[in-house]
Image (cartoon, one colour):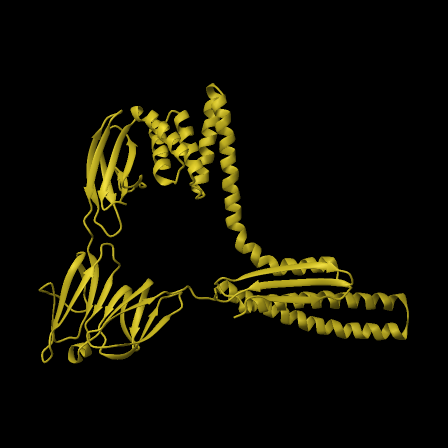
Length: 457
């Protein structure tokens, strides 16, 4: 594996500084494209936050309509910062102050509630947040929501509204009877009602029941397949409640096969296989998991799909391959004995090269070849110009020779830069790779530098 590679190109003295800068910019362009968007968004969020602070300070000092205008502009700036994804504790706290000063107590209470539960705070910062929250409490109707298990999203009155937070949660709501909708992935939705008045708090708790998980059972035909003593059809997905279960396969002429398995709440769809060879010869047990939903083949034959599978290969040596679109496949070679249980984990990494990288290689390669052909033609012209100047020392021949030399230098310099960039892209993959390029004039010529690291670490 190459850790770093440095290309050093000595350019001819007649290569102009403009051409040298053009070479550096051409080679550096991909780096600028990769990093600019995130940096620009971060800078925009910082400027908006500072703008909001200026308007908030001005609003706290002003009176009348100017005060309202400044505070509204501060609110707009903080909301834009949040839309950019910069939901920091300082932004949330300043948002709460702004809403409080605009006399919007319900929204201000919720901002300070988020500030207190969503961030690591120093004792001084927590005390400041709690003081503002308690000052608002007499002005709002508050609901405290808890759930089993915790971490459920809470919506008020309507399912199509954004969640107000996750349990345990204390929020301000409009006074009256409110309908609370709790949801969490892998669990069935729960609903509760709370009636609350301004200056009071209603406590609500709800239990979310685990949602069924789709399980497909693969088994040979001609046998009887049961799940928890209820007959099911092989190959058809069954909705199974989370918990412990038993699947049993009875095939004439072979001992029955019984498999105990457990479905976790929120588990992805599962596939369980009870193979004909396992029924006839005994079986091992292989638990396969992957970091993404994947397709699994055992000894070249499809064995199921999903993030977790349980296979029953016959005793002996096997080859298991885990594949997923857009990821590098993972292959395990293993042996299993009758009654033995193995756990195999496949971590599939996104594979490359990306389409843009391939296109970049092709384009740079074609341009480099074109530049090389042009350079050869210009070398011929330089030779003819030099011969003409030797035979006749005139200003016209001297100018022709100088122009030909300059054209050759610029063309060869650009061709070399394109070739270097093409080589770098040839070795570059989507992993921990980086390129650094630079160029600088030196006495008697110039230096073009390309430094990079690539490959898996």
